[in-house]
Length: 586
View 1 (cartoon, rainbow, N blue to C red):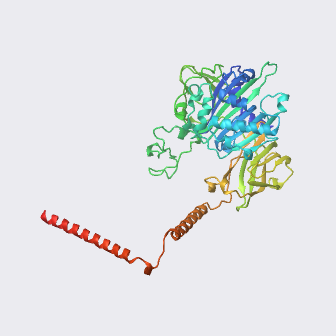
View 2 (cartoon, rainbow, N blue to C red):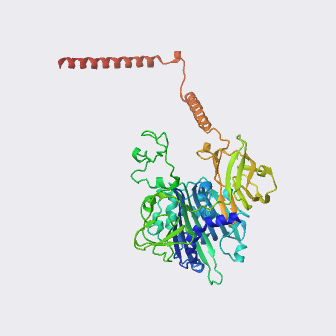
View 3 (cartoon, rainbow, N blue to C red):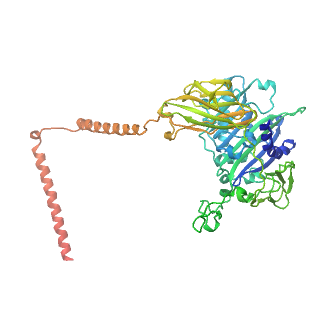
């Protein structure tokens, strides 16, 4: 019960901030939520939401819903879509629970899952292939590489978040794919912004800049499309939610554009702890800034102020909210109307449509901090073992609650060249073997056709640590299946942990495989070419050249050659003497 209260208090700020969006009947909403995580770290969450009638959508009458994405969903018969682009690692121990409960977060790289309507599995696979190839072109990503070896069909880890009729649910097929090797960059951000009604030109989307986003310590971009049916409504709505979350380093974000390379701070600007006995002019001990909030403003951390509001977002909901105590000093631009909630930690600003908005938080002593929500589970995953033939995976899952147990589903999607030994799967709680696995689904891999899928339902008692381990064998690939940087290793997708509506992704892993010496084919080619060239030259000489004995040679020909050579020597000598006479005359 205590764990539920702590999580509820921590997520109260986010719930209050987006409550206006959920209750409004407008077709488009957008909001920016700022939450300090540390004196020098800031979580910025951009949320965009559009609604359209399903009847209008089926008639291809697009207004707020992006036409480019809508036509792809119609062509692939996709009823619900979830797409994620993520980079970095969320530090749950210092930053608390994940934004949106982890529901809008994906694993490192690209993650995609969707419910496709089809009569058979083969038909669903074909439509899934159509969907991934179309999304690959739309978002400039390598989604077309999500083939059968990277696709799974989860059984208990994912559930539809939209409202689907019973007739539709019977024909829905869930398919899930990951690309942990994909590098997320500005080529993915630009198509993301083009899906918005104001396309990054006005409103909170005008703050989004690739230099700031991809310089963050952690960032995630998500797109969710689902049907929403209200009770008693004549027509259902199709809702698209676009979210960008990033953790910004305030010191790095405030660096001027004309100084892109960090340089040492001048001596007179160093913040030193003068109470230390060894403090002097040439010795500086850094001052602990944990007791002070870092000074920042929107124009400093994003490069410019917010350019008004998006004209289509006319729902009257506040556009910018910040989760700080009400006692914290916050200054906003003229024309913005401030609203404070009853929790004492959330304040929102209603912006003026035709004026730029900036918000400044001066540096001041911390007397009170906004509470951070405690995660329901701490998760770590790493490789164990040694050698090039076999290995193992170890997942350490900790329940921080002193009173409540946690029931969750642990899902692994492994490539086919990681051959899992299911009989080695062990779960120990506080170092003791206990019957904690309540349910299991296992789908073995087929070489070069599909990967391994493992879903385990586990119960962890309160204030306990579970260690989940299993062994696997490494397969040997064909030389054409190795990437250009084969010695770097192969990226393994993060594990997915589902606790009701809360999702947690572990970090991805880097698996080293037995790698051949790719210089040997080069050496073989060079040696073979040399042998072939020598052999060809020798055989060609034997076939073309004429060999005769010396006593059979034509003597007249030999004398003619000698005479011609002597005549050439005499002619050169005469020319040389003539040249000498000319030089003497001059």
